[in-house]
Amino acid sequence: MPLYVSPAAETHATRIASIHMAAFGTNVMLLAQFPTSAVRQSLQTCIATKALADIRDPNIAVLVVQEDGHRDEDGDKADKVIAFAKWSFPVQEGERYEEAPWQWPGGTNFEVLEQWSREVEGAKERVMGRAGCYRLTFMATDPAYERRGAASLLIQWGLRHCLSENTPAYLESTVAAGPLYEKHGFTSAGKISMDVEAEDGELITYEELSFVFRPIEQGPGVDAD
Image (cartoon, rainbow, N blue to C red):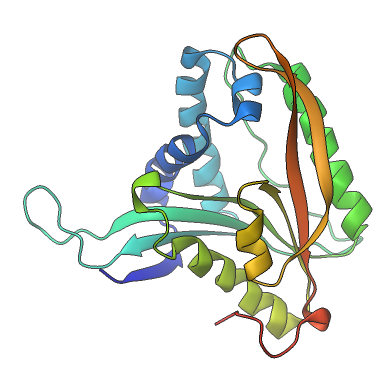
């Protein structure tokens, strides 16, 4: 069935949270920040609340990919959300803008959460400085619908804006997803790493990659359509 991208509706917030947890629920950093199943269950509600706030924010594009022609259990047509992305619009130096804050669940490991947040924001500052950019903050696909092109559709939405406005894009990615962004013209801008305690008590180094897309560096062959 064909897939299409559209702006998320407020009614999609719960589904977005469900996809987020299905895609990232076993991520080492998420498990370190939200260390019990009860906390992670509450986290899903917090994600839905934040998604709703982001959908209402004119400086953010929350997008969903839906499967055209999907039928529900009663056989009625009901296009199914299978993936989502959050693209934050450029904020120029001197421009005043404050995104709605997260409301974290009780039991969150704030020491790990805040340290990782500092690492992530520090990486962006080193790469982009204070220049305005599009930022792909979150993107996830329902694992049951992976490898059907949903992620590419969501990436291409942002790249079209970057190319038309000659504005760069920035994101952080898991190591496994890195090749997907490189395929679309992003270049690696460094590693972000932090030691965390795994569920079995072992200390491990968690690592993500930062990527940047600069339209001025792209040739005519960039896959942005």
